[in-house]
View (spheres, rainbow, N blue to C red):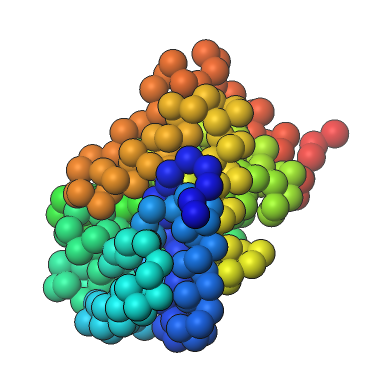
Length: 275
Ligand SMILES: [Fe+2]
């Protein structure tokens, strides 16, 4: 039985045995049950790719996806699964996307989920993002709120959004499960209109689980209203799956005065303070 508003999860490590997400089909099935109970209609399966540890080329992901779909059918779990990948943003990404070995969202060839290292924005990142955009591929930046360099200098992220990149926050950052600092940061970025998607980035049936998306949705609804919450967790995910452009949060859904950059820095505790 589904509970809560319908949502679609566009970042989830549910495919078993491919990365640090679900290790077995049993775990994946448990994650699927948790997802359905939380109101999740569909999940984009996004195993890590090109991150120096895991290589999950498209052919392997498609095979694992077909297997898990069949298992869900056998278990009568009403959850749609879609193809995807979480691709580490290395210089080969544009060529791997164009030759088809790195999966785009729902295999549409329109958008890719890309992740940065945890602490830095490597030299060349602007070039890689620009190459993808010039080829008509929209980069969706996975959980930028968890990148220390972007937290220090969020204007960099705003520039990427101006170029046409899209932004996906992690549900647990919004809900406060990753701490008050990340929750405040997430809210500020939402209020600035930089965020297009919220996703679970789930790896397990508990703790880092798919149902965190519903908790985050409730937070966003309380901060920005129901329309904004629906846009970020259902409407834009649907558009992503259909290969359509994502919609930015309308100014009417946000506070009238976005925070100045100096406001951001108050929330960066590791910033060296001048006397
Ligand atoms: Fe992830």
